[in-house]
Length: 126
Image (tube, rainbow, N blue to C red; front, side):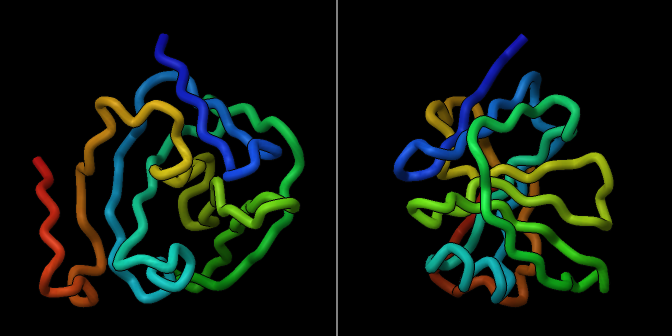
């Protein structure tokens, strides 16, 4: 079974996911742009039961468009957002694509909030 490790910039917070992700989503929403400091965010979704957390995280919660909270877990030392759990998707953990040690084979399966996508961004999904 495939194991993938994702970690923060300093290595103090990590998450290991087993198996294949349920989906990989490129999100162009303004909140993801703010969170990443980039033009979009990429979330790799795994069943929470297939993940193991190494280290401790700080937590930031905000209300998503669903009206339900999303809990973002970030490193207490370096501030990197490593994973998050949206309440509207119980049992699912999203892991930040850029935090994975090995990104081979992780390709987007969907693009969301395309109304906020910058005109110069092109995303290919199956």
